[in-house]
Image: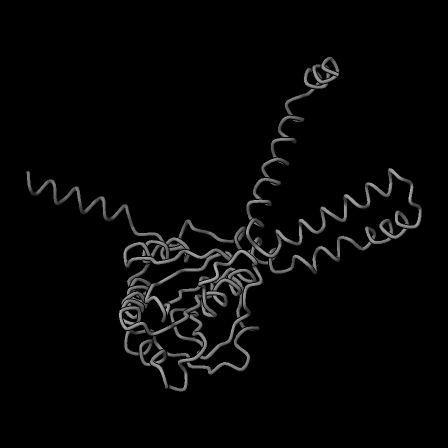
Length: 272
């Protein structure tokens, strides 16, 4: 056995090693991408079905083997249907181009206004749910919503989520630096590992980010904390600085560090 392993290793060429390396990286990132999502649970289920099929082959259970052999013939189409949200999110991530995604003054103002509004609401324990559309279109989730197409500012966001107003229930969806829709109701997460003290808004934030590549900001009315949901994961109790950094990161914005460094050097030169 040991000699056989040595012979296999010694017979390997550079292209074989490269082939194994690429496949390993793909499998690693695929598992990392699916971890903690609904797709991970589906993958476990498929693995169990494969084990049953393997045992059926070993035990020569002809009927079971025949059923599975016929299922595999349409297996590719079944996988595409089952993993549709994960495939869309994965392809969207591959298509993301962060090279030219520098933040503009208008984008900076949008983020800062949303953070200021979130802090205002959190201090008064007023619940809110704000969803940022990224590459995947959210039109499927805006049916039945109130279309606004309104400019984003502190006063508008506070007015929407103030209790007893017509639009305060549900979420708002941000598209192209505008409030596209309000009073939107989102799918809830089916993740069984959600903490028991997490409310409906947080579950909706996780649900929409599991099915799409959206980013969801949640203000808790019970605890007055601000959380962020991305890829089905929840980042809880964020302060203003951490929230801003994460929004810049997840929305694909980058500060113009080159200009900042240039200004810093000018300042140092003047001091000298």
